[in-house]
Length: 128
Image (cartoon, rainbow, N blue to C red; front, side):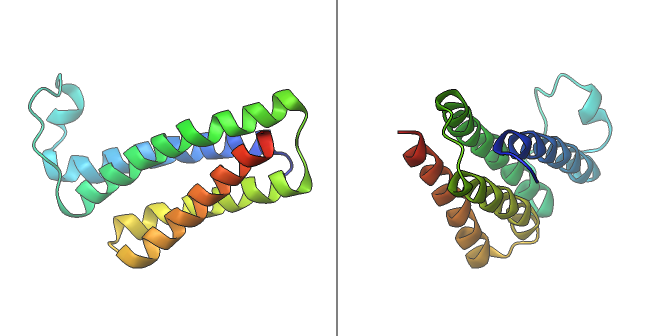
């Protein structure tokens, strides 16, 4: 992994993979019709499908927080070895987070989430 912008792009691809994984897991529960319907009345997803849905939504929120931090650093010319490490830590934490959430590994999942959010907060600190 080269740059912080490259890590942002990799995380964007990861979020797309998570979205597709959530669709595949959820479709087993609600059927193919849900993919083609207007989705006005999709039943609530439970079990692994519900956890994947929540992990996918959390991944999008993480992207919404991570991307501005990286773009602020880019605009300021503020990329350093510390920002690269923080971005790498964020990416690895987020990649680990999704399967932990999907398989119901609750306490460790939360610790991994904290690592990712602290890495993001550190990037904002560097951008100040």
